[in-house]
Image (cartoon, rainbow, N blue to C red; front, side):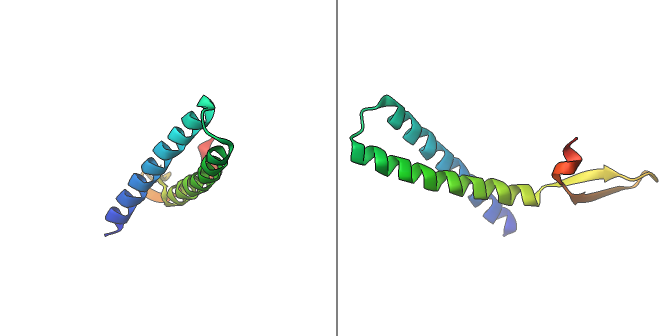
Length: 84
């Protein structure tokens, strides 16, 4: 079941990202009224926050595979310090 929830989150993230890209295109074209532009901007801010939260959640679930000095393998949470 956890896999299904993860798949749903990915699908939701991609859907939100697609909608956000469409909003940006609409705003860049400059053909929306002021009210439509404000509504689109507000929706874009909400979508951006949702996407950032989804990415943060995914980042917390990422683990890395590490080889110990004795040759055994183990997983541990990935941290930004490990990215170097």
